[in-house]
Image 1 (cartoon, one colour):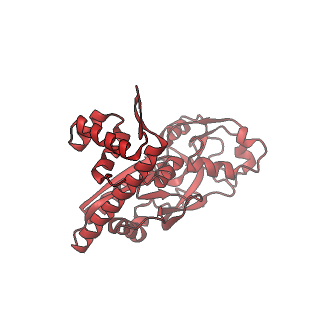
Image 2 (image 1 turned 90 degrees about the vertical axis):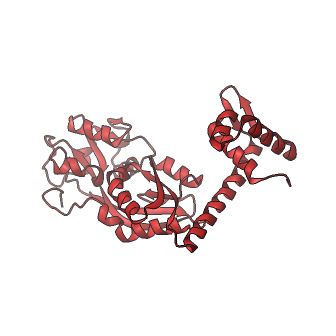
Image 3 (image 1 turned 120 degrees about the horizontal axis):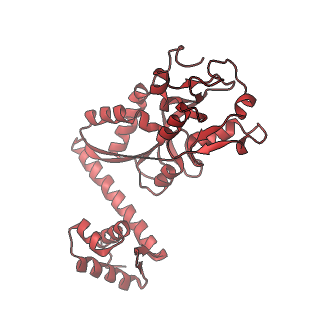
Length: 311
């Protein structure tokens, strides 16, 4: 493999991303024949096919995936080298990609704005998705840090706590249970629940909370794509929901939603900033984690007012 160069590996990464030689060439500022030649040289040198050509685009073979993994590791190492050099020069610039679960969107704007103000030359990218997809991106090295309500168990990670959040059951203000004290699990078990699909963090805790109620997990419920859809449906009195307090702060304070006083709730959880333990921490990652550890909690909704949240 003496003829492998990083430029050729970059071409493989571009082909994987764009699926077409022409689009990969445009992304790299090269010509399509140049990309085609680099791919041909790599395949001839390796003696294997690296991409399957299909009517729907080009897809890596098993051998191609090995090359791509090496390319990603080299690219990551060069990015770390760039960050390290910048740190030595005391230039606070670089790039960080953060993955986060859906609830983070309710406090992301002020938090990220404050970080960007402190580090104006750092390019920060935020990807919000379900928990499963966020963890998958962490595994695939598509994000540098993930913001989650609990660390994954199937990969080795570093986890830093930066605040707390609470999980509660919420209804429309006119619901029969709104205002009632010490509601039991059995009472809410008969209600129609609105929730996210499997793989979301709140859905997981919902199932854990009611798992000791026979038949509840197969009871009346409706899956919805987003937390916003769920809140609108609850306000329309189509059911009740199990959500993070941070996702319903505005509606509770405006009197549009009511937090039910259910025995055993709220479930108090922590927010974690998580990175893979098998990769080096870049100066930019370290700066972001330190920012979260020292200031992150100040950007989380405050529910200390007893008139707005059940004790």
